[in-house]
Length: 357
Image (cartoon, rainbow, N blue to C red; front, side, top):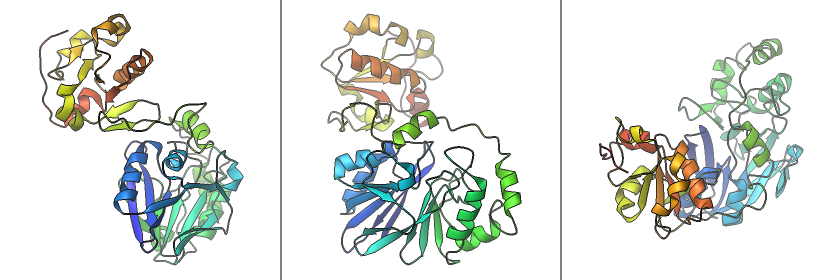
């Protein structure tokens, strides 16, 4: 069997690709919207066919790639039935099986982090994908989306930690770079759910976490209840051919610094910082034209509408807004420099100093 663990650095989400080598059929667990091009590229390189995407729950910190993957590859979308999300191909319940070739995942309901959490257990019980129900030496919070400390305690103790000791457990997130754990490890060392911890200990701990809500919750949860489909009649975005770009869920296309370095001479590079920033310690791209964001619409005619435009700022925030404004102004080929000048400098790429407009 093919198994690959992929990582989204923005949300610290792990996505898992499982493939049956004999049949070529594959599943993706917890795909991230922005990482769909990466995921599809890997599926294609490994000679696999994506038959379904599975989310462990309705995420609050990122938007699922399920809908986008279905648009690109025809894969089914599987999610807990209790969620009632729009666009689901398979509404899963406890005890269901999701097959890929000659292999399958057993669906186990593990509510508590949210009311619709599922854990997927491989047919031979050698590995399980726990979502946020059980993290490495931790667990998901229980204070929103129908969460419950009592439910989560029962779910983990009865559905996950009863698996064989050597069963490998793969979470949906880890914020320290740890990739995998095991049933035996978590049963012994998990400070929230292992050892001699009882329901009173656990509920008392979880009810006093006092954590702020995830920053993207207001966007991510509604989007994930549509399986990641953009709101309204937004068009399906395919990657433009003029540059190697990544589409962010906000609708802004981004270009990586190295790609801009290799091809920037072919495009218009517009720095939308203020004049003082253009000549500060960060410097600016050698061929950049300074047009502060506050002046952009008034100076729009200084730009060639027939040539691609790459917008640049300090961190990528103002230039993302400039990209949106340029798109609305009729520029068809626009991208934002990922990470702005901070990332450009961090990667040791060439800069120029001195004024210019």
